[in-house]
Image (cartoon, rainbow, N blue to C red; front, side, top):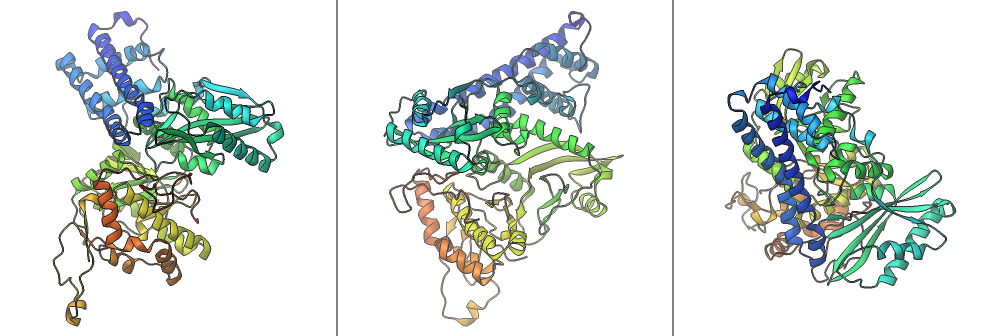
Length: 601
């Protein structure tokens, strides 16, 4: 990083501009943490609607502050606002201004956002921004996170009692002794199953409590020689009484909790990079970019994702190719075989029967970004003005991009410039998974497909196009929805029973013989177009037959309209069964493993 020999010799405007940008970041960060700090009070009051509002407000903060900072910088610099020599001085002064801050990569990302938006930078501009690929990875300098450490001296119940006793909730425990025995018993059984009970030395728990939707989580790890086991306790506040709802100790269970298909956590962390380093110790397969994002630092997550991609491209001779699965009518999707992400670019024109506009597609992705994803919608990172080497694209993919996304993708010498694209975690398309899997695994996936539709419904999401090709399967066997161009809110739909007729010519007509409005949905027709085997179809109907009835959707819709918050948990918690008063829907922890538009008849 270049630093001036004598910072005091710089023009006052460079100093002042750097100071203003640093102050703007500090204001943003303060506002971010202020919203995050509301989470304990929301949890104690059971005010889930306010929690939903906080989630959206916090997501919208970054762009609002960046836009305000860009306007302030323009006003401050006037005619010199696009003077690159001056911005090189501003960049150097800014580096000195924020040198002592924790999470120093965060203000650098903020500075780069301001610079890129002001200059409309394509690719990278290392002279006037902080380039992710050239910065020291944040975890390489992370100091140990502030944790509560508990020595294990033979009595697990006493250790758990001390752990739960350190919590500072105003909400009373429903049965503290019962929770202590529940947690201690599960921890003991898990350690015994691993043959690790005798070598455990201590328990370390991050001091900050993690909040997500209606649950609070204590996130920790059990340490011993050659041993690092996750321990996450899910806490529930029901009827103004606190209890432990679940104990998560397997890497798979904790990975599902920290999934890119779930909403961001609210945890008031003094140093986020330390928390990410801690989480990496118990989730070594999770990319750093995803962990930053899940802690609410979405822009830093994008910076780290870009770093991961650039570093990977430097170490491979592979080419970008079309992503596996059916060709999309709205997106061109491509990937690198050894990279676990997929790139999605909106086509210039959408083929029949798609009748959405580009602006509508963008709005649907923005809805997903701010919505409770409930473990069933994959997070899509939005990138603008991204530059990639042209030589890395397979000829057939290059031809399609230049021919069908020419409004977005441009050639510039040896590079392709992408005005706009999305990057998502790569999944196995469900239709391909069903073809390649054993009958048992395929039937598990079909059941979880039905559960996915239920979970989405309870969070006020109707996928629109329910074909299996629009769903993917994770490495944990969970089914996730990832094609958003026809997605809408359940409360915006009109779910209708299919009209009956006694006239054969009406029943056999190619077009509906009755009126169908744009928001009409006929659930009875869903299953007719799904390419399942007879066995898979029978499995789906036996487990989730009611999702193919209008009555089911109208019931869920009415509960949403009434203001209910319908839970979808990332684990199998101690919750009332379906049919109890205001029941949460259980999300499956381990899932038991061109057609017409299905929105309309």
